[in-house]
Length: 286
Image (cartoon, rainbow, N blue to C red; front, side):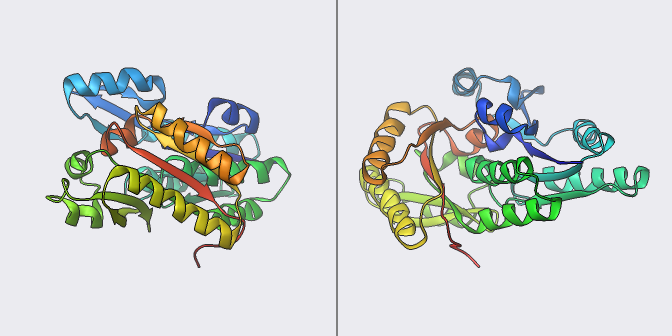
């Protein structure tokens, strides 16, 4: 009996990592004018081109049927299950999974299922999932896997710079960053996700200065707490992401991957956004 790992598509984990670690992924959905598709079935480049032509689509959580099938399959094999999903403040996925868990427990009372709110998305969620999968592969128990995930969440940070706040505003996900609306021509916001919500981390003049400030904050955290891993996120700005990777690799002497943010998070953040996700060796939060 082992521990299986389930996450959702907004983790944007690279396919090679998913396959190597045996991670299961439930897909959120995207809908243009009532035409719904699973996020994992949509090519990022095609999606952003479609969004530029048809406007901002709607997103929705995985179907209850998909969650039930994936969760029950793990239990039916005799394994325990650790589920790590995007912030419950951003999606009903976490709550839906809890409902499915109760359904499964009525059928299989001895089922062992943990459901964890990552309080974020993208590779901040992804790193928590990778941590869980590595622990499971090493033969850790479900409780040990859960503890490893919670530790990673306390050690990770997601900083990003949107090209425009309009997408966050229209999607209702702007949180405490709403004070920046109306000042777009004066400042560039560096945003983050804390306690499950998008919030303002810092306000800087010019995007060049914002990128520099974002990198300096990462360097400051690493100097204090050590470095686990780091990736660079982008939405349709590969060249800019590559420049940031080169700076990171030069200054830290580590490899940094570039990962494109997919449709569900991308429709709320918008093209041109750039960011970094990293976690440290010691806790940054209590």
